Length: 163
Image 1 (cartoon, helix red, strand yellow):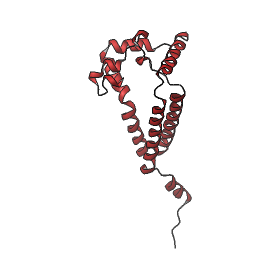
Image 2 (tube, helix red, strand yellow):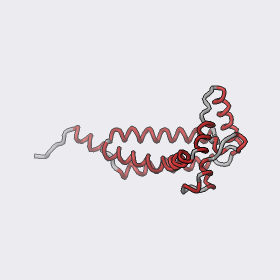
Image 3 (cartoon, rainbow, N blue to C red):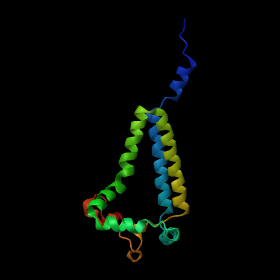
Image 4 (cartoon, one colour):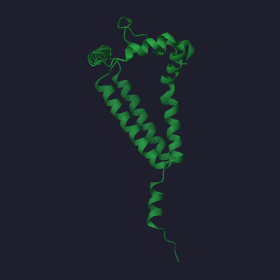
């Protein structure tokens, strides 16, 4: 007499996560993001104008946190150096570590996290492509910002030219 499986077990088997289907999907999103960034390169004047417009709006709304934070991280190396390491490495180390942990231990949460990560990546790519914006740290010094990535480059792997 042939054994029949219950519908719940069969559905569970079909919906089981497989690393060999997940990894290419994540790599495809990352490659798309990287390609989009390359396409958006070159319009520096526009990016600077957009960055300055955002700073003006923040000043009008009294939410300009960039200047005080930049001064704090510039003045206090014990804060600036770890912050630069965090900034330069977070998405390369923490994001994959959390995704792997969720994949192995919490499949349903992993699916939601992966979907949100991919969706937010594509939304960010659209925003980056349509409205390239220079971060304050890359503005000319006359605007009162210091590029801490360049300032502390001797402490990190990114080098001064990375900024």
